[in-house]
Length: 276
Length: 267
Image 1 (tube, rainbow over the protein chains, first blue to last red):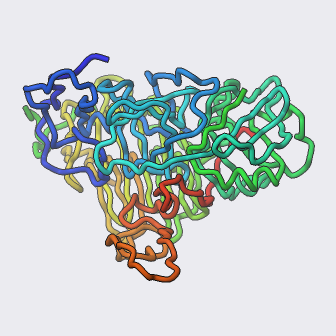
Image 2: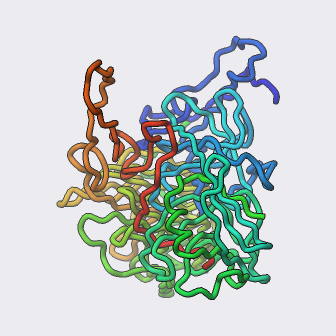
């Protein structure tokens, strides 16, 4: 990773000194224009994020389930990566970069469908962490710079594994199984995608009646660009009858028995769901 | 480098184009649009609306009257008049956002009336702001962060208000990134949000106050049972984020609280 000693400067247009209403929890926005000329040598941990102007921010896509982030680095270990670990919650919009010290590609808001945003950390480098994003494409990730107070950080001991071939879902806490159920998955025309997804929000569903709570995942259908009024988000939820059990007949969602849902809704947001 | 300041009342090339294009009445009522006015105390957002010979229902339009709501349109094309991409609107958790990427208004012969690479409005707790990226009104480059209610007057035909902010009697506020008016004829509003007034304590929503002050306390020897501090809500956290936005007392990720919302997942 190249060391960026020099400066990425602000663009030349005069700021009127107004700070945006939303607190941008990123060093290098608006008032922090230039890095100082002297560089402290070869310490990669000190790489500062590129300055992002308000104009740049306005153009960055907001990282939600509705977005597609172009140029997002993909999760390099989508098949069985870190089982559990750290999750972070941005307190306000956080700029997401394509690499440590790289180019801004998105802004991660503090809420996802009304739930507080929690994203899983899959790599760390000094003050930078690589997180999975709730956007398309599947396995999209990005790097955020954790300046002081920018985000909450927490430990998550839970992991969900889904094995499509055996129609099974298991919840693990610190590596120990705390429950296993037979579930349903997507039909062959609209399969549940494989990968290292995570739970992005907890929705007390107000319109659809098939499940009182829906847990949307970070992954989207590969075969459906949209579904109903949504962007093709794959979800975890239950179903009003048992037609799903051990069957591949959904449009992509993972359908679980209601007692499985009772346990899944307890899991922290940002919990990884490994789908194989 | 501001050769074209907003205070100049310079005629904007292309003003006549929009007026000409509006000669034929066009009415768009996308399926996702809602027409009921927002109830008191709700937050709402829409990316575009137009009234007059050219009518466009608020699109997409969301309110949080029934929980968090978000909608997105890949594009909206009004032939001969406007082309917009990535229209987004979300409302809930005490806030609202609306945005459009890559818009062109006033298509037809000659230079477009209005172009921008992105515009966005947002509000929370009775306050908010909007910003414009690479926006131009004719030849005039518009400021990214115009002060509230910056007007650009075009003699005879148009007025344009940037970062239009209207405070309502009930304390709610409506912020519109760009509000175009053709006198007595036509209005066009781009990226508009409305937020209910904030709580007095500055927090969002119906959260209960934290159960303990933020001071650090050392345990006293000989104390009997001491219940751990449980922070149910955020104090000073993001607007409307409420419970579940901090680690628990042991540094573990919190158990989430389901939030009333609607999202069509793939079933």
